[in-house]
Image 1 (cartoon, helix red, strand yellow):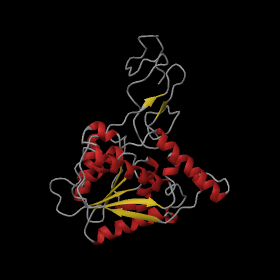
Image 2: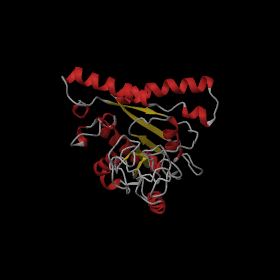
Image 3: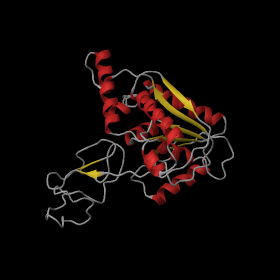
Image 4: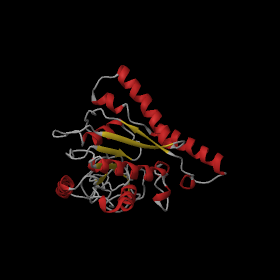
Length: 286
């Protein structure tokens, strides 16, 4: 499903991507209005492509491999940069714990699986000292997984607003589960095959992009992501929450998430930090 979510950015030349061209328009309009822009995406490859596409107006990328001190240095540079400057970040790295109130335009490149992830990212610009209305753009492609994910999250949000309280348990009910992922992937593959005679999701023709604007302040929530390694004793790799499997590197090449500090043993013991499992003696392999 990771490739399906990135269909608008998985093209050789972003000049042919409707999302990229709309993003460029937003950045140019922001510069004309004396604004700065923050761009968020879940995927490392996407933020790297966007940075290359937009060029010199972009600050260094903030991703999972950038230390906290360096992240703050990048934000300080962004604060001093002229109007029209762009700060690009992975949403799980730059979407929490940072104050970026010198920007008043926020762009989210694809729908996230929890509304609170987007809300926290938007809240980076809604900090004390923000002197302008914040414009939020959500880039969506017609007839793709973007629409399906958005529709499912909107339905969950309606249920939450009608019946749930503001507890953390209620908030978790807004996250798409594995069955939701599977339904989206199966429906998208069927649609692509029907239209293109068996082509893969990477080959699907991109549809025109639409944007949503939201200027209301978003409530900040705490989001924690957890990466789980594959079973130790059978493999020396780990799986990332973005869907990438079989990883042996310290960081996920797709989204930049760091390898987890704990591991789960094949015997069933979980959350281990030691080199050997205390129950069965199995050795950690990564």
